[in-house]
Length: 294
Image (cartoon, rainbow, N blue to C red; front, side, top):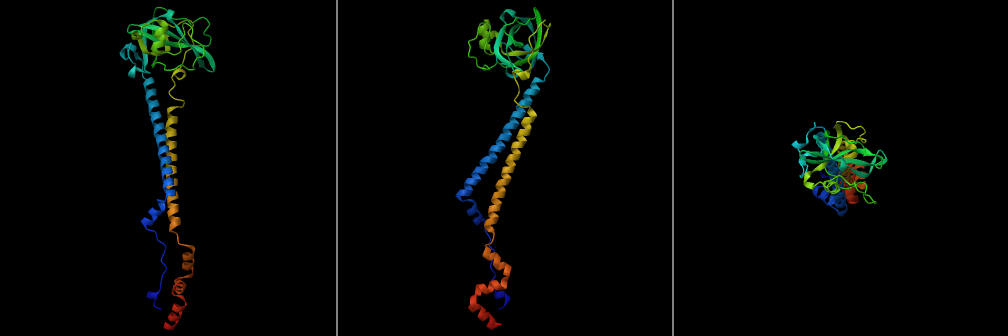
């Protein structure tokens, strides 16, 4: 029999339509949707951590700026706005008789209280967080008399008490440092109070026995972790998203390849050779005609 008349078994080739029919079954559609959700969620977590890094970095940059006069960036009776967390310098006179305490404040695993003394300035009254004491019942810390210059960071008003007190406040105590409680406890009209409060870092002249100084991280930490940790977390989430996308692609490719492989019978026929395959295709009668023809 001439070679041109022999029958050759074709390979099992799958068209794009075949692949679509395989990949668009209900089971695969559910898999695609699940992997899309995973990849998008991981990518979104990375963007969120990047936003946290940028926010923390911006706040740290604001805090590191040189101190400026209080009156140049803030005024009594209005919101702090861009002045929040700026380092400022103010001059005035302490209203010692209006000193307040913020109880139930923990520092270095010790329970104590914040000490707050209003400062009368030319532009209004500023609540100054002078420090912390572990014995609120003891003699109060000394306060400089006369004209005093204070330096510190201007922080936004506190919005909630930490921890929530179960016992009622006594006279001279406030639950948080904000305009309303300070005004109620001191009798200073709200329009005369600055919206935030000053975390004291230095005061001149220096008092004889000041309270224990507080750090910014004690009162208003940027985050539970450092800014660079947030950036590394963002990169980690994106790596996870990329790994999930690679797994998704690999699973689809493996499924297409396994579906496009020849059957075991086709593989066996290819192994024994095309002549034997032609004989199987022709049958006994065909083989007899083929032999007679030769």
